[in-house]
Image 1 (cartoon, rainbow, N blue to C red):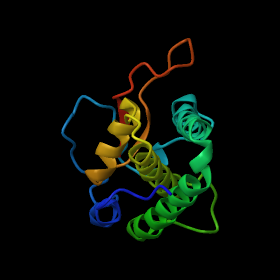
Image 2: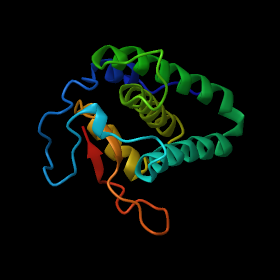
Image 3: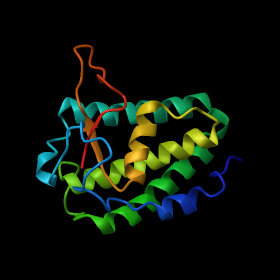
Image 4: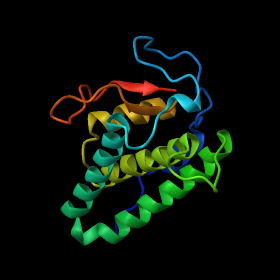
Length: 165
């Protein structure tokens, strides 16, 4: 049976989820969001591709670890639920809203990102650069809300550049 890495739950509980949204960031060259309304809509390619790629990583991890898929899925759901409970208290999360509501999208992306970090650690898979970058911003109390640009090949122009709130 695979288990969450030692200290992972404590790390997740110590993250200042969204505590610094709207504040200055370490890379002032990145495009910024200054309010929730500036996010856009989930169908925007810079937003949609972020979530598509997260789903692809999840599917890849499950496909490569069929003998442990139940344990992995259970751990993933545990982390996502925990992050949602922690993070939703820091933003105007609204259960009556859906994924078009930016605070809800931010909270669920935070949960998925943390869940993917846990899965990668549990399976000794290197953390993809884009997940490393999102994880960094969440750990800094910000929201990496979208890729900065998508190329003509429908791939992110950069796996390290996100619009940050």
